[in-house]
Image (cartoon, rainbow, N blue to C red; front, side, top):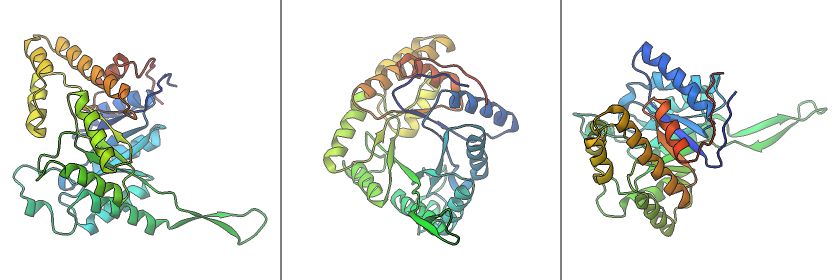
Length: 315
């Protein structure tokens, strides 16, 4: 049994294992994260379906072995409407009821023409497809009425939760300054129920973005995505992938700290300070990119005062 105290909702992101050894380690991590009491645990999806089956295996493990809601990532990259609809049905058949709909990043060496096959090109389209597939699968819910053979009460279907991505500092492929906010509005109009941000390094990045999004008409919750950076190598890789501005304080600290233990402490402290600041600024919770390691993200939550007690146990 777990023992946690937190008034701030939190969640985690994991990625599928690539080997049997890493699968066993990931199951241990899932149990440790689940014991903390997250709102959900999301599992990434490989571009073009490269790890789609493994993603589903992890999602099933979360559903069957924890009390935490599993959330499945889906991307447009390499998918058609037909292919994506098949995947969605497979997830729904496995009792997966929460999704993160993403356009997806291009794999190395792949062009836009190769990645998008013409009929599934945006996250907003994917949001609509998820909702439509679920509606076709269960258009309503029937409940038998006791004492009245053949009679049933018909209720509206339970809608799936569909999260989408948001970009506090703009999308790298945006053609004009507010295009990322227009895209978020389109996802909301398509039926999205939650937005999760790409990582950022300063609280004003998130808080300013939320303010601008609200002014534009975005009403769904916007959850800040926070990534603990615990080495200079990981920081360089993240900056290369995202195009974010260099966080000077963290960069200098990681470069001059000689030990991995010291670098980890710096990264945890920076992420905890960031998490605390956005929560104090009104964030509805925090979403932590875990890199399939539970120790670091749980340390961030404890240092931020979000997780005030924690006892790790497996179910």
